Length: 65
Image: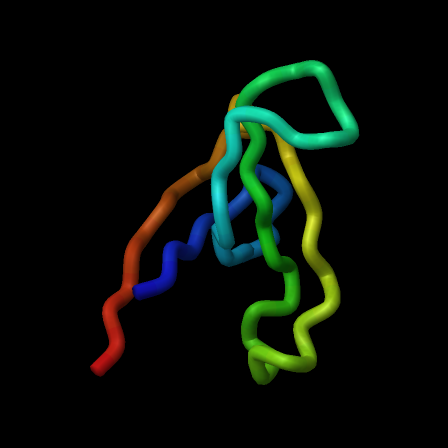
């Protein structure tokens, strides 16, 4: 199952994981998103941690199989 979301700037991203703490910030609540999730799993390179307060237009889960 993958979780896909649309950001307010129009980009569609995959939500990869969520964490309460990350090593680069004392703030809590982070979400890792992948901007090139349409590529094969090993060729994905555009990952970014965004604050959990980041607004999304919509969030959907898709199941395969």
